[in-house]
Amino acid sequence: MKKIPYIILTAFAVLCISCKPSLTPDEPKDPNTEVEVDPTPEPDPEPEKPNKTNVIYVLTSEGKISKSIDVRSATSFVFNGGYFSFYLGSMEGLSPEVVADGYEPREGESIIAAAVLNSFNGKKIVFKEEKLRYIFQTKIAGFSDMDASETAVSDDISQGWFILTVNKDELKATLEFEFTLTTGSTIKAKVESEYTPGGENENFVTLGDAYQRPLRVGFYDEPISEEFEPTLYIAVGEIEYGEDLPRTTYIGIAAASKLCDGKPHDIKECIGKGTLATMFYSIEGHIFWDIIDGQIIISKNENYDYEISMSGAHATDEEGESPNTLFEMYWSGKFKDINITKPINSELNFNGTIIPLKSAVIGTDGPVSHVYLCPSEGITTIEAAKADNSIVITVSSEKVFTNVGLSTDREHFSISYAGNTWDKNTLDTCSYIVHEHSEDTFHCQIASFSLKSGKTTLKLEYKGPLTITGPLQ
Image (cartoon, rainbow, N blue to C red; front, side, top):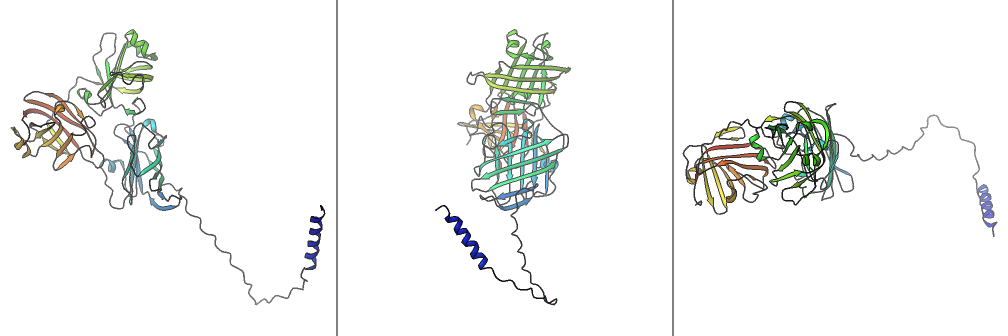
């Protein structure tokens, strides 16, 4: 049985030889006869791959390109006191100046923007996972507007990420992103741009897993004793005067002069010896935090010029509800005199137009109060205030003489002027601050006015006469 395969192969070979066709001499070729050659078919073109730079690709759920948008301009620079930003669009001419003026895309145009703190430079940010501050916004033709931040991601986005890399030495920047929609489509791009230097800020503060902000300005006050350096305050807000510290988040440090040697010192040990006092005030929750341990390094460069870092530190709030929360910060720069006060101009700045404010009327209607700030003198009634083209601030009655942020009076807080009303639906941030008040004098301010979309400038401060009325009609 083992020889059968061999026999079959032998018989097959004989059969092949016996069936081989006989060869005949080649016939002479006619030189006038054209030889027909079968044409070689052209290969099917390979599908375009989404790997070109400076192109926005829209891919199907199968990964095929359904749409591509050429990026005709892009720009990168620092905005808002320390955030690296990147803007790209299908239009030409994007620049820091154009963006600062609030460019509004025309019909059919597309624009995408991203912004990160210095500590995120070159790092991958994953939507719905990153808890520290970032911004990513899109306005793409054919799609609804979408955005992502550490607090919220548009419902249209199921997942995504981006990397913003800024090379300050080579003055170059790159934005790479990819995000998937709930429909299954994917939008991605890698875009390069020149980087415009200026405004870089490596100063920051971190509290826990969800709070990181740039530190923008420092103030000094009198030392608490002869052995101490001036008391230092370092603020998150873009403020110019120390009197505005209560309306922003800040760090307070009182350190003995011997600690300013550029060497690391144990915070807990220094507090125990009475050579250091530190605290952190968070305006978001209106809570003071005590820094209780970790390491502090203070270098004094010259008068009122310090480099300060705290690392591996922890803080506990005054309520005792969040003990041992991670705290870190870094600052390098000069400090301003906290006792220099700003001149008070009672006026409204609305999109660059200055309107003097000369009267104030407050009317209460149950749980809600309305503050009317009027451009005319001698206004003492609600009816007259309404007829005077006044700006109206609405707050909860119990908070009408306190400091209120959008987050602390979300349901009632709003501002109305010139046919516009801005409230929780349109405002990104906004603060109403009362500096002082009496029966006939009122000093208030609107600050940090920022919209979720669009560009409107609104700054306000008022100090002058006040009339308080009964319920509104």
